[in-house]
Structure formats: structure tokens, C-alpha cells
Amino acid sequence: MEKQQLITKLREKGFKVTPQRIDICRFILSSKEHPTADRVYQEMLRKHPTISIATVYQTLHLLNKIGLIEEMGSSVGISRYDPNTSPHINIICKNCGKIRDYEEESVRELWSQIITKLKVTPVGQHLEVYIYCDKCKELGT
Amino acid sequence: MEKQQLITKLREKGFKVTPQRIDICRFILSSKEHPTADRVYQEMLRKHPTISIATVYQTLHLLNKIGLIEEMGSSVGISRYDPNTSPHINIICKNCGKIRDYEEESVRELWSQIITKLKVTPVGQHLEVYIYCDKCKELGT
DNA sequence: TTTCTTGCAAACACTTTGCATGCGG
DNA sequence: CCGCATGCAAAGTGTTTGCAAGAAA
Image (cartoon, rainbow over all chains, first blue to last red; front, top):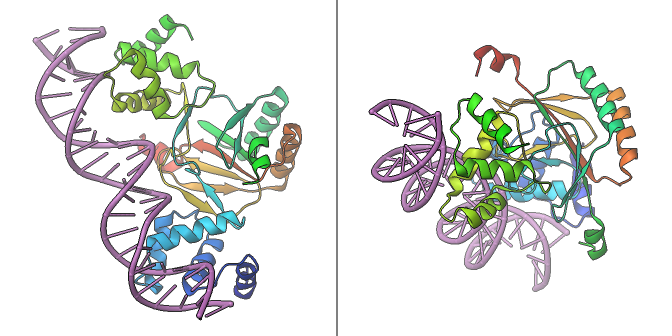
């Protein structure tokens, strides 16, 4: 994404444009390494020696909210444990965190076709689909 | 899983069988709610008032290691951020955490067939396949 | 000028660790 | 009896929050 395009996008969402924000956005949006917050922070320190890790987090959340990046892992922050170790889909509400399982033979079949293409031997998998559940949609949050 | 079967399984893996372990295992293995460690802990407190949260974690890790449950979320403990918001597969080494992307049109197609079956409107998704990467396999860890 | 953002430090929440005690095999 | 498991408390780690000072619009 172009710098100017990014600025426009931020402005139209009602966010102010600061040097820190631009650099964080540019770094993460062009990154191919799925960086952690700390990785982004370290990178930013080179150009902004006084930047705060809080600013990094805040900007990442912002980008996640407007859909430019996906937060992987602790979107909820807490580990959950699933006794169902066969391939199935977890449908998760992005707002309240409620999880619904979806298990069906045809899904398993399609998924195994995908696995075959990967040419790896998986030792596990997580298929997570994020939604807003009916209750949260209603509340409009 | 039957109680006796569970005991056998633990023994054959070289683990000791304790009342706490049995109860934690039985609870999580029959659970349909993807409980958090704290949820398991609260449940255990009813029968084992002096149980420690550390014991719960240790047992969950153990079950995860022998493949009876899947740890969801912070398997690595740290959030990562992905600028690629279109459906694609992250191939993740369970040992070193290295992530490789897998993107291919046919996978996207198969995946969209799966989504159709779900009858929901996703606002995001994570497809994670866990493996042991070549380097980690070599080291035998 | 007004409002949002930054940087800092303290607070948080979940998870892990070290160690003495105790139980299982 | 030996060795692993437990319980406890302390330490660790990643993330969030409150607030005063500063920058963008």
C-alpha cells in the first residue's frame, strides 16, 4: 500500500496521522514474517528511539480493527483446551469469544484434500472462523 | 474415554496416576466448552480444595503432549500480526514457532466451499497447520 | 484551540518456575 | 525406598491502562 493511500485511509476512519503510526503501518503491512509486537517495537526503535511499546500495541489494534491486519494467537489472550483433536472448525465470536464447533464429514473431506496439497505431515491443526454472533450483532458492539 | 483406559494410557507413557490427574483428564476430555485453565481449576477446586493452578497447567501440557487435547491460542504465548487478511494457511512448527505461509488458488476454492457450508458470514479466519519443521525434526526435540 | 496521540510507569492477567513435602509404583 | 507429582509462592512475560505532556487538524 502506498504511503499516501495509507494516510487517506487513516484520515477517513477519523484517525490522526503521526510519524509513528505511518512507520508502524508501513512496516507491518509490508512484512512477510508475521512479526510480534516486540519485533515491531524493536524495528521502530531504530527510527524512533523514544517510541513506546504501548504505541505499538495501540496501532496494531487499530489496524486490526479496520481490517488491515489479522491478529493471530491470543486474540482472546487466554489459552483454551479442546479435547477434539480431529480436524474441525471452531466458529468464534470476535466480540464475546464464544466458540461453536462445526463438524461434518464433508468438511473433513475437503480439508483433507487441502492437507494433501500442502505436502506436509501435520501434527495438529486449528481452523478458526471469526464471526459476530447473533447476540453481539444485536447489541451492535 | 473410560477411566481404566485413561489410567492405562498414562502408565504406558510413563506417567504416574494421581487423583488430581485423573479428575483433570476426565473433566477436560469430556468437556464440550473449550475450557480455559482457570475454568478447569475452578472445577477441580470442588473436589480437591487444595489443588494448585500449577498442577492444572502441568496436566494440560501433559495431555497436549501425548495428543489427547489441543491447546488453542497462545501455544507460543505471543500475539503475531499478519498483514495477509485473505484466507490462507499458516504452516507452523510446533517446536520453534516458525511460520510459513501457504497460498494457492485451489486451496482458496476448497476453503470457500467449506465456508459456504457453515452458513455464516465470516469476518476473518485462521487456518493453522502444525508440523515439526525439518530443522526441529533433525534435532529430534 | 480542541481533540487525539504519545510515552512512561504502574498495573494486570495468565503462565511458569523452584523447591520442600508427599504420594505412587 | 526412589522418583515423579503436588502445592505454594515468587518470578516472569506479554499486554493494558491512567495520565500528563505534546502534536495533529
